Image (cartoon, rainbow, N blue to C red; front, side):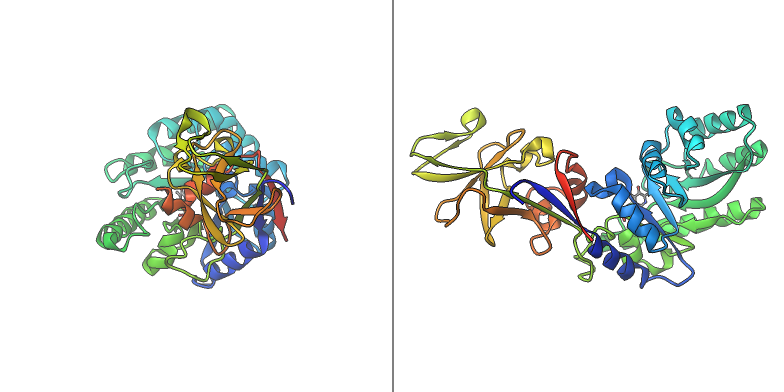
Amino acid sequence: MKKTILEIDIKALEHNFNVINSKLKPSTKFMAVVKANGYGSDSIEVAKKLVALNVDYFAVAFAEEGVKLRKEGIKTPILVLIPQVGSIKKIIDYKLEPSLYSFYFLESFISFLELNSIHSYSCHLKINSGLNRIGFNESEFEQAVDKIKDSQKIKLVSIYSHLAASEDLNEKKFTKMQINLFKKIASTIKSKISEKPMLHMSNTSGILNFDECEFDMVRSGIGLYGYNNELDKNLKPVHKLKSIISQIIIAEKGDSIGYNRKFICDAKTKIGVIPMGHADGISRSFSKNGYVFIKGAKTKVIGNICMDVFMVNLNDMDVKEGDEIVVFDTKNNAESFASSVGTISYEILTNLSSRIERKFIL
Ligand SMILES: *Cc1c(COP(=O)(O)O)cnc(C)c1O
């Protein structure tokens, strides 16, 4: 296709789901993380495929992301990881299951349930075991559990926590400390309540690196989209970002290219204009070390990335306007692109804007 396209390989998604599932005990539940529009892919298409594969749960960051899934007919339980007080009504209206992670949210949520005479609402208790992001810590969780019990409005479906450095084997000791702390807190809670909540802690690299962290369910995001392949070469990248050479410009020695005259040609230079820019998620910070592939050869970004286009060096390349370029694909994947521009695949993928047309490989 003669334009910028983000190909989403749904077959690769299925493959990754099966690879990750094959590492789990048959009884372990699978929660697919589809926040941030399915890591920049398309949360609806991804969720529909995963429903067909019998996924047990979905997780999103914010309520609105869950509402989008419900409006498309997704009936699978949806955990909202970081629900906000301003979204409580939506959570209830769309049968989403919130994390209870702070006294502010917990108290607001209980008040809403009381006001609306809602009983037994399914919720998940988030424990902070060392990431120090969200959740109740060791000194707070008992008070939170007491509030939950006293309210008699909440059904605790799960207790969970999140690892800080599961991908970093140099931090193994810290991770094991987190796992042990979580186990201890979870068993204290279980002894205080009559329900039998599920426990879960692993994200993708937790699944791949820490068997002892499997518990009753795992939460996989990036692995479903094919990354973490440093650890697991069996995963296949789902996202392929392609565009074309929209125009070729011949610049003379001394000509400047793009905004702020960042690049000055030291000789006659053949420049390709690629119709994709920072508004599409190709950050301006990629001006420095960004590159694309043309007919398999790597070529560098020239000048500053603009809002809607960027320029690349086409010297010594036998190419014409309309030829395809690849930003990342299966072979030159988003993780290598990310590391060369100083970030991680998560950020590259989730920044891909809605302006880029998605094409699904089914
Ligand atoms: C995003 C997120 C995940 C998914 O992590 P991956 O590394 O993408 O597998 C799991 N749990 C929580 C709490 C998250 O915020």
